[in-house]
Amino acid sequence: MHSDDEPVGRILSRRQALTALGLAGAGLTVLGSAGVAHASTHAATTENAPAVAINCVAKPEMTEGPYFVDEGLNRSDIRIDTSDGSMVDGTKLTINLDVLQITDGVCRPLPAAVVDIWHCDAYGVYSDEAANDSVGKTFLRGYQVSNAAGRVRFVTVLPGWYRGRTIHFHIKIRTTGTDGNPYEFTSQLYFTEEFQLAYLATDPYAAKGARDTTNETDGIYGDIGDQMLLRPHKQRTGWVAGFCIGLDLSDAAVGADDGMGPGGPPGPPPSDAPTPSPSPSASETTSA
Image 1 (cartoon, rainbow, N blue to C red):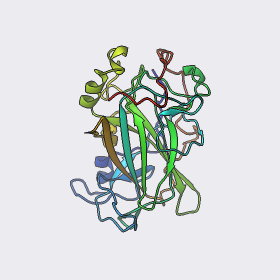
Image 2 (cartoon, one colour):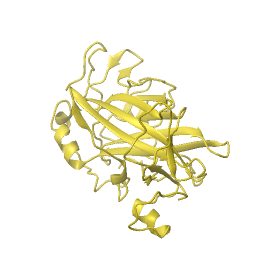
Image 3 (cartoon, rainbow, N blue to C red):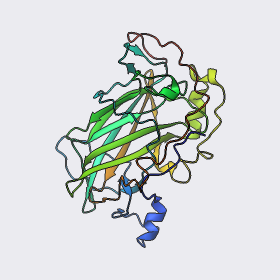
């Protein structure tokens, strides 16, 4: 079992948050819940950062896990391994993330937030990890700074799977809270079961065989992962997905480590991570 096993801060589902506020069944903005961020399926679309009158739904933080490396790579396309210029195998995925700030129940685009993303490759391997025999590699890691519309875009590949976890991405958003202190939100993004099964049956993913963990049996996904689902749609030779995360920057409980450090105590890495197969050169394109 991979030890992405301790949640960061307090986790509330949307139903729990509404119940706690006496708003169950109401389509109202949820604010003030300790240790949660907020998100909506709607995003701001202009560069002038107007207020967005939407229903912001509480979203859970999730563990950072043991594989975060602050590489300092400011880039949109994270498929390239900067150590040798090679490009990872896999089907192209573009992720558009919109970062919003919630103030007085209204969401506005949040510029200048640092957004990191990292995940394993098509074979279940993380870069720059001794446990994965990938020290010095930098594939599938990077950050972007949100623009005036709160938007960041990452070009990556669909991840593979490894023992003990459902397929997932890690994200971290760093900015400044209303109290002037650093504010950090960490969570994970997932796919539906149907989407996972469909692309895992294609190359290069199919060669690894059937995954051992589904969303339902994953200990981190639990009963809250469905709030962090990406729903990609086909675009040319790859896929594109959007997701919107609003942050209550007055909530100091977001990012609290509960005395355990970010993500809780690290544990053993996946024991079945294979040696990465040779990747095509950076001039070659990924599989469709």
